[in-house]
Structure formats: C-alpha cells, structure tokens
Length: 534
Image (cartoon, rainbow, N blue to C red; front, top):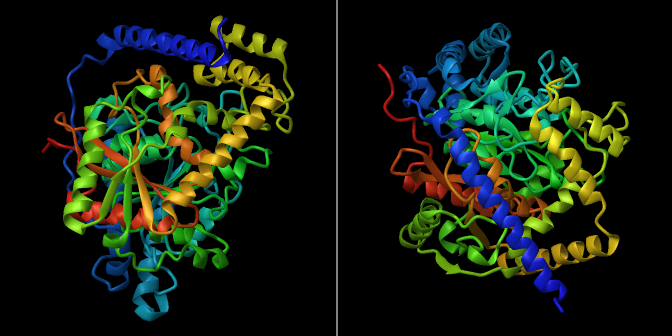
C-alpha cells in the first residue's frame, strides 16, 4: 500500500520527467531558428551614457551638463539599438526634449540650493508599458483590447516626475505579463543585448534590454514571481523588489481585486548603477511618511553584516532544475568577495522548507480577480467557466485568436488550482507562515541571504517554456514578502551576464541594497555589451 508521501514523490518525478522531455523537444525545435550569426550592437558613442542617474542630476544642477544634451544622447542611443533589441512600444521624444529645455531654463535661473528637492532633475527615465504614463500606451499587449492609452500618470510616475525625471518611452512586455519571455504578437520579441539570439526574460524585459544597452539609466518595472528580477539577471543590471506596501501599484495593467495582490505584486526600480536603486526607491514611495521606515539614507557597514548563502535546493527539489555551474560560480564569487574584501562572516545554510517553493508559489495563481483572455466583462475577470475556456482554446488552435499561448495556458492552470481543497490551501498557508518565522529569526536586522536567481544564464529564445517551474527561485520571495535585490556579479565565458539575489527581512531593504553596492564596487557591476561595432 503506497502512502501519500510516496505518491507525492512519484507525481513530482513524473512532472520532472515531462519537463525534461519538453526541454529536449524545445531544444530540437529551436536549434535551427537560433543557429544564426551573433550580431553586435552599435558602439556607445556618448560619455554621458556612462554616468549614473545620481551624478547626472548633480552635473545638470551644477551646469556641467545641459539636460537637453543628455536627453538627446539617450534618444540617439535608443534609435541606434531599437532595430536590434526591439524594446520600444511608444516614445515621447519630442515632449521629452521640450521638458529638457525647460529644465535647462530652470537651472539657469535658479540657485543649486533651490533645486535640492529634485534629486532626479533632468534624468531620462524609461517605463514598462504596463505602468501608466499619461498619453502613452498602457495596454500590456492585450489581444482582446485593441488599444488603451493612460489618462494620467501612475502615482510612481507622478512622483518621479516631481523629483525631476523625464520619461522617454514605454517598453515591451509579454501579453498581460503572463510569461517569463518578453514576446507578444503585437510588438514582437525583445532581444538580449549581449546576444540577440537570447531572451531578455520577462515580464520587464523591454526595460532591462534598454538599460543593458546603455539606452536607459533608470527604469520602472513590476514584479510578481520575478518579473523584474529575471530580466535584470539575464541582462546584467540591478533591480529591486521592495518590501510590500511601500510603493503604490495603481496604474498597472493588469491588476487584481484580490486583497493579496498588493502583497505579492509590487512596482520596483531598475537601474544600471547600484547607487541609483535607493534613490529611485525613495522617490517611488509616494507616502513620504513611509520613507523613514526604510531608513534608506542610513549608512550600512557591510563588514558588520552576516552573510548566509544557499546554492539552491539541489536534487532534493525535484521540480526545480539544479543551478548550472555559472549560477553556482556567481554565488561563490559574491561570497568570496564579501568575505575577503569586507571580512563579512559567511555561512552556508540549508533551508529545507524552500524545497516546497514550487507548491508554495501556487498561492499567487490562486488569487482571484486577475485579468485574463477568457473574460468577457472588464469588471468581472473571474466570470468565465469551462465552456468559455474550451471556446477560447479552440479559437487559438484554429488560428482565429491572436492571444499569446502563455495567456491561453493560464486558463486550464487557474481552473485546476481553483480545485485545490481548502484543507490543502490551509496547509500551504501554515507552511508559508512557518518559513517566514524561520527566515525572519535567522536574518533578523543584520543579515542577508544570497540565493540563485535562476537555474541558468539567459537561454536562447523560446527555450524558457521548459524552465517555467524555475521561477520558484524568485517567486518564493514574493510569497514570503521579503525585499530582494538582483545584483550582477560578472559574465560567463561566452560573455553573458550572471548574477545573484540578495534577500533581507521585511523593511530592511537598505541591507540588500548596501550589499549590492559593495559587490558592484568590487566586481564592476554592469558591463557594456561586448564587441561593439564602430
């Protein structure tokens, strides 16, 4: 007689076998489509593109740089790389240049001290298209809605504008953000600047591709299950998923009516330079009374932090792919740097509870009120049944639907998860609470956890479908409500970025941000795409 634990192990092995077969099948089907000559981006021609947002604002205020020259440099760079990376959905270049001239006029007629309340004055900003920028596309590449333009700025964009930032464009995403590769039938596929044959990840892939190409210096993305951190990892830039409840989520498409939405989902900053992360985060928090709770302005002595680390779950987590040698090397490189350069106390740990991360992450998909391609009423995203699901799937199979396949597959998965018995859901919630207590007690207010970002560096296009369960490396931190910083730590032998996640306990974002800054100082941080054209 087989017990339930043995049965669960058999099911796990079956699922893993199916994904292994899928991995080989996808590799075979995509081999020839990806077997083309590697192309390179045009050379970065302006020195202004190598300056952090913080320093750009300082130079503009001090009249060392004209804002209009900075904005023109970024516009020209975007035009140079767009044919290669395909990141832009819609630009506002003319409006941005007008705003830049207004900044130069303001600086000319004001004292520097009078501009102190604008820490991002004149800094170009790019924004994920799913986040509202007034007058710009805000439709998440939806197939069932032809077009939607934002009638007003999202609160975070309004706040960043008040800080002086100048939005340049909105960038590409998968449809409804429901995939980890940035591709959709409307705007096409976004390419990785380090190898155009490779994916940028998703769903904030358009943003990250621009940043890695030196076509942006700061951007706004969103994260639910790694949507911000996966692209940042694949393209070697910095990203931060904040502690839930600090950055407002209004103005995002899609959204949800579920009370847990603002816990699992959050907008966050994406940057090329680590020093810009706290600056961005502070100016994305619209309730200024909350800024003080994060103490982002406090200096953190990294040498006094305890560094815990894990190399993933290894073979014990049957549903996850074991991190490859490059991802393991990334953790090792970060650990040796913090130990040798900062004399940090480091310790490898085994959080066995993380072995269940794939199942724990199912809570995210069990939320109600999430927009989807099956709904017929904008106000009732859950008002559809099995008949409607079959109808939409048949339309897709008969080539009568432009909906992305990832959005189609969301339906059956959601219906199956909705069948989960309440007692099982209760057990999952108990496990999450237990892990939260364990991790909080372990890290306290003076430690961080280094953890793999994914199972491998950026793969070739169309090969992520067999790795979909590996998002649990990232989404576990959404489930636990922890702040996480994605940090680049170097490059593979093939010139593809690698990086790590740095997690802290809730409200201690400054610790993970400080460690990222320290690693950037020692390891170099963002690396420009190699072998540029003349």
